[in-house]
Amino acid sequence: MNTRRHLAASALLATACHADAAPPAGPVGTTAAPAVTVARDEHDRDASLAKGAVTWLGGPTALLERGGFRVLTDPMLSGRGPSAFTLPRHPSTGAPNAPVTRYLAPGTVDLQRLDAVFVSHMHADHFDGRAKEMLPKNLPIVVPPSGAAALRSAGFADVRPLDWDESTTFVRGGTRLVVHAVAAHHAHDATLDRELGKGNGYVLEWDDGTSGVLRLYWTGDAVLTEDMRALGSRFGAIDLVMPHMGGVGGDGPLGLRTMDASETVELVAALRPRRVVPIHHTTFAHYREPVDALLEQAAEKGMDKAIRLPHVGTAIAIAP
Image: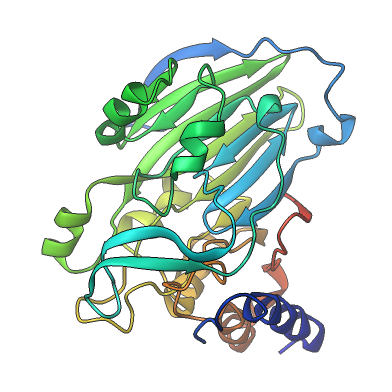
């Protein structure tokens, strides 16, 4: 395995260990909504955004920038501490009403400069109370239909529910950002999958009309399925995959609730993206698998060159 990348993974895990406790090791069939034009001043935009970047902010939260758009995924904005949120039932132990420690502090982001927020699902570890307080209430929020009522009751005025196989479009200048909601099954166990509710993954397509379409697949909380393997055939080449990892529940009685390294490597083998930026790891105590497991298993398959291990607050180019 690449020694430099292994050291980067070890440094990331060491940062987590310094906290309160050590962590454990447009296609056919898509329904399109009307396009929405983003009207924002150009003077506050960095010209480098046209090239595109992913900035991990911890947990499932990332800032995606391309073509002048700035969008945020699954806003978890609470600080470090022993009770960042509470799970109804701990995925590893089964303990009820389990508080979960946050090891890594969230990265900073200017919430006033966002164009939209994309939410995979409304579980407590994906959209927290601090996000409800701090996000501008007029900010467009794309969310599974099951989460729309909660957001509206919290005062958000521009909630855009998307079910599987539906899409919505944002327009900014000469660039279109098309957001496709795709299936995200939260568990292999069918009963648990139903209990956890229907969440979304998203395929994002930026098209400026000149340099071709760039596609990013954000898995959301999902275990590997055949639908996910087939996304390349359905949409076309995927440039970047942003998987939710951590192997949540892998050591529990009902099995995985997010992908582990083995499933992520299988997904990468199926989609062959140019880049892989894993998120949803290291940050919280219920993430069970160290992220360097992905580097090790990908190296065994000769696929580690595509992986870019993110550090909180550091931008990574969307495409080589």
